[in-house]
Amino acid sequence: MLSFVKRHRIIVASVIFCLLSLHLASNRKKGTGGEAIVRYSLSLAARPIQITLASVRSRVKGMWEGYIYLVGIKEENEALNKKMYALLEENNRLKEEIGLNERLRDLLKFKEESPYPVVAAKILSLNGFGTGENWTRTLTLDRGTISGIMVDMPVVSTQGVIGRVIETLKHTSTVLLLTDPRSDIDVIIQRTRIHGIVEGGSDKLILKYIRQFDDVETGDMVVTSGLSGIFPKGLQVGMVTRVEKGEDNIFRYIEVNPSTDLRRLEEVLVITQGSPLSGIENAGNSGT
Amino acid sequence: MKDFLIFLPLTVVYLSFKTTIAFSFPLPDITLLIVLFAAQRGTSVWGVVLSFVLGYTEDVFGAAVLGSSSFSLVLIFAIVHLASKRVHFLTAPARAVAAGSLSLVRGILTMMVLMMSGIYVAIFPQIFLNAFVTAAFAPVILPAFLWLSAIKVPGAIRGGER
Image (cartoon, rainbow over all chains, first blue to last red; front, side, top):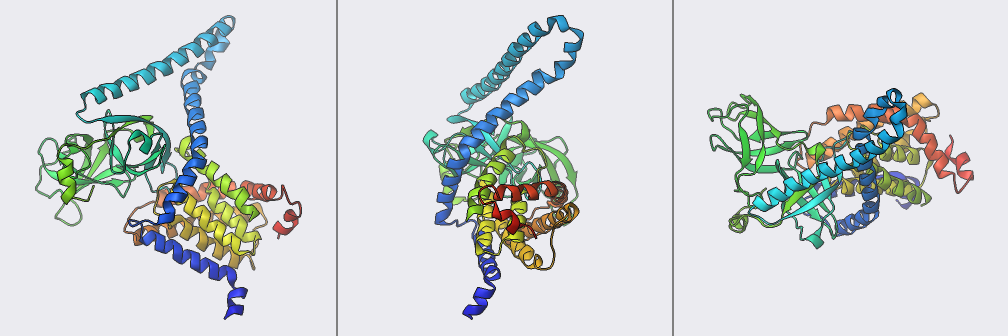
């Protein structure tokens, strides 16, 4: 027996680690104790890299938008080159400042108008927008428990719902976007007040449990119902873009376009306190 | 053990790059190529551990279902290790075909684990695109790994070639 294990040690080890992986996957909701330590260590290791790369991304984006497009002018106005580049650089910097100011002003306006206390956070990284096994849709924020962020807090932008916090560390937190397949949000159609559940479908949203005879049309706005205990009532989720009969003849197949362009997000707001009803709802409602 | 010191930081940097600057672009599956590389040259149990750790890191990094990546990577390590006794990926086309095929296998395995965890996602278009990109870059990246792993121990180049 021992000689068999020694001779096939790699295969034996592979089987053990495969079983361990399957065990982890099947117990995903329970979680393991060691998981938090690994997450914390990885966060510590990756945070400086992510901050540096995020800053590089923002600079490159600024250069691309404000400078590269205008390179052709150089040939036509050689005499004014130096002055132009200096002005462009200044202009680009100002444009970035204006863009940032506009975004922050919108966030501030939203923050002031919002009846809930919110914390503004910058996005460090986006997971799952590339290729391959990137079926997840999450993002990492530069705020964590030290800023009062806690698990299950709603994350919004000025355009509407972004997702909810699923993990917090001291200085960072992870947000499960509403487009993630694991996300489900209790919603209502704004026009007809019909209830449904919006589930993530990677790049779109699927509105479920709407019956064949319910009044839903393309262009209807979908907002949070406030019943989940996580999202306050009335936040924009998206717009209905496709309504079909559905395969089961009971419910309709409805696609919803998220109200926020998740790829273009740079700053978000975390609602640090739920609606006055959320405490009551939480007691009897553990879903999203 | 040396592979850990080289490939684990490389994976963290790769995942950071992928999630900050290049989140919209298709990138080659570096973790899969590391596992392919390790399985081809190594006869140690550390290769299995490395595959598991890389998969676990990827899952933690992407806030995915823990075990989904590590399962596929460990299984791929075992497959390549068994195959490497008969098949050698010496030429660029062979490396590309191997990497592309394994990328497809990885995608299917991940989908299976997700289904087992109650998550039903259709990621076929992404799986094919990822396999194509990984196959295209494999002939360049795999020799680069060989060079990288031989930086400190020159003898490893001889040991790494088949």
